[in-house]
Length: 230
Image 1 (tube, rainbow, N blue to C red):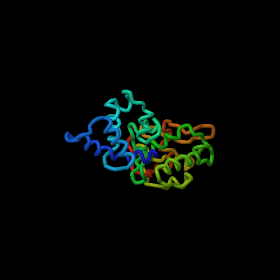
Image 2: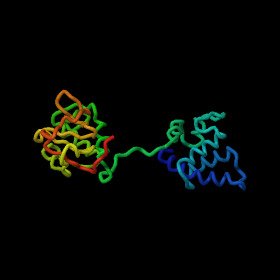
Image 3: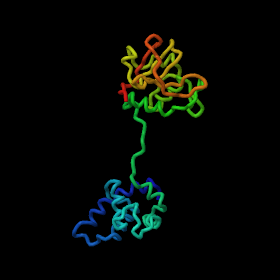
Image 4: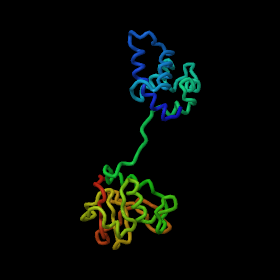
């Protein structure tokens, strides 16, 4: 049985447990609950949530829980439930949904900041757009927004025309683009006087003080709703 099937089928356990644990039920011992868990996994019957799977295994272990021993070997328990290995059992403990990047419509400036920080340490490479080999300043900003499902042009001269203008550095918010020196450089504002960029050959993507001043700022652009400084 694959993990996907196991996770899907474990949802049937809760209602079966409820039936087995009613006062009028005849089978209320650990063996009956273990049988119910195995049957539900095999047939995919019933309804419930992921927690019921843990409850069923806990009952089958005599209340010891997944981490307990109580005379029950985890490997044999996994085999008896058709999961085949303790790895599958371990993977089912504390199941959480995988993290996913926000959709383009839901992304905020804070999401831009979080995504940008993932690339700290990537080297500057002129013309680069691949984080595996290196990125230049606009290749970096393009990649960050692409990761959020937002397409912006490749070069600074085009990126500086995207979104909406921000009047001054004092009004900049996390996730805004800072364009400096006539369009020769672009960075992402992080808030609290900090920025992140891919600076020059020999350097890597880094967080730094926002050295941009109103005198050398060419443009500030807000691509998506503003974040808040943190």
